[in-house]
Length: 357
Ligand SMILES: *Cc1c(COP(=O)(O)O)cnc(C)c1O
Image (cartoon, rainbow, N blue to C red):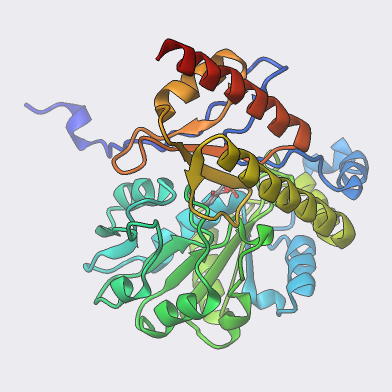
């Protein structure tokens, strides 16, 4: 006789970055934004009466969908919202990746793609990045069941120019191509305008990184009316009320404050560019990042050791024990002060290493 466990759908879950319980840490490990959400978000949350929570939220989240549609200049029927872009992408896997042929994504990329593919039994093939950690569009000109990649890519930070993204979309018009633009607001070139031209293109973005709202869980997709309709049908077959009342209000308030959004993105970009020179001075190298993190390796010190020694000093960065990238650290761009704390810790650690030699 078998065991009931034989019949269970088993998955190996995604491992999120550590969320330390203690205060007083310099947290540069999960690409959160170091600045608070726009002031209007605080107002919107204050004005959400607890009594309204008796009632279900608007299943279409029309206030938030409308705000996003206005901001990006598209019809609301071309916008889908979800509980973080993780929810949006999971729904997209289920909806769009339904072929016997493998879907394609880069070997070094957001590790959740593999987890969803496994969970939904979608066959997949991981396409190696080039030596310099770039996506080569020619590698995606293959008969496949769909394509997904982040742009800029994570954890490398490398951005693919819009013409090359277009090449991938153009050469694969018989499948859905998803471009995960989680980090696009930090300097990459969005292909949102191409959703007018290609019905098979879905662009996914999030409020977690550039809009300071990882804790609220808001993500969205923009695509053709057809794609958004298919995605909505799937969502309504799962859970009609994905977006709760406070999220809808707070999300709309965040979109309303464009000046704050642009100012905070500019600050992160400024700190990132300064941090690049500081890393170089200390013997680190990295592919050029257009995201709110830098993926660095040191000329002599092992990433695993640096990770551990930084952690002892309450500085959290991300280390991936995976082929090709096990000597890299992904460092989120924090405030200038946080980065200064990181660099003085690195100076101490590297000086100790030198004394030991
Ligand atoms: C952070 C991230 C997401 C998910 O973000 P949410 O918080 O779920 O919106 C999706 N894709 C990539 C590449 C990310 O780095």
